[in-house]
Image 1: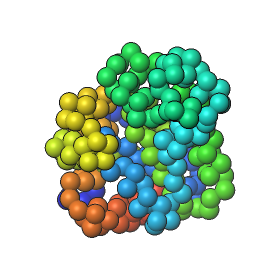
Image 2 (image 1 turned 90 degrees about the vertical axis):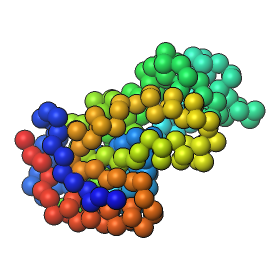
Image 3 (image 1 turned 45 degrees about the horizontal axis):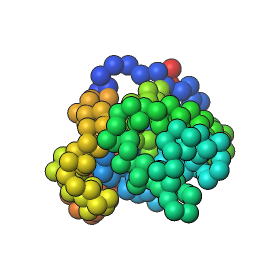
Amino acid sequence: MREPRQVPPSRPRTVWRVSRDGAMVVGITGGVASGKSCVTRLLEARGAVAFSADDAARAVLTRDGPVFRQLVLTFGAEVLAEDGALDRAKLGELIFSNAEARGSLNRLTHPAILRLLRAQIDAARKDLPAGSVIAVEVPLLFETNLAGWFERIVVVAASEPTQIARLKARNGLGEPEARRRLASQLPIHEKILRADFVIRNDGSAVDLEAAVERLWEELKQSEPKRI
């Protein structure tokens, strides 16, 4: 595993204005099954305040809430489990095999998810002392044009064979379905070109821990970007 490295963005980014002593907001993104959540948890263990777009999605899709009800109206009862709760596996099968359905889901859920996530980040920025780090895991960070939310962006990357093996083991997917999920996102090389730091995660848990420790030291030593 290579040490996290500086990668020049493909074009200038607009970032939040922050005070000289403000918390640094770091976006964590990358490919499917690359280890984004692991990196976020390891940063949290080192003192970062962590948020996740997936956690925000779960909150937004609370059973019988307005977004949940609209989702059921849009996709029907086939995306529900026997107890009436959202069956995420069934929904995943649908949206990763149908680009139109995936677009409909994104238009339905993303506004509410991003409002909640932004509110969480804003509240943390107000409360945290100088030198703090806020780590925010956003799988579709570039796809949803959120680069401007962050002072630093970390891309977690793994080789395609590694991603497919993890999806098979973690999600019980066959190879065709795993490949469809990889193809649903921006190619990893494009994400890497827009990153400030890259962590390669094809090795062991020990390798990943060491890489995150090096990343943490770099984050703590760097100044938030200002415009």
